Amino acid sequence: MARVPDSYFYSRLLEHLDRCDKVFKVSQIFKSETQPQPSRVERITGDSDRAIFQSEPLKADKDYWEVYLREVDRLAQTLYVANYRRDEVRRYAYDRAGSEFIMSIPGPADTAVGTRVMQAQGAMNWR
Image (cartoon, rainbow, N blue to C red; front, side, top):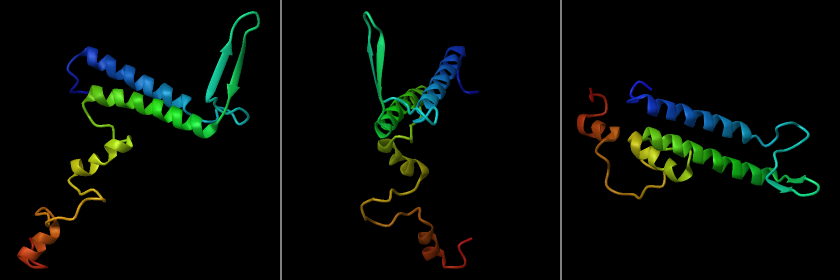
């Protein structure tokens, strides 16, 4: 937070964090043991107001997780970082860490691998 240039971005980040916390709390499938989180709510207004709640826990989990990821995406965009919670972005975490992705295509040996240092200097004299 020390690198945030002014109070606008600071308040914006606090707003994003608050939204992420609220969405995470709502994403619980069972708020109580007796009633699961509804995946679909249909409200009928008129002479008699009523609401129909339908619960499909797996669908609700998927939907609320996507909403949570969107809020985290907004936070990551404000901070100019990647959101590694997304499956599409998670692959690039390996590149950023300097490692190879598990499903990489075989190719020439990487010069940054420690075994190349051992081959060049000898097994015990690499320091």
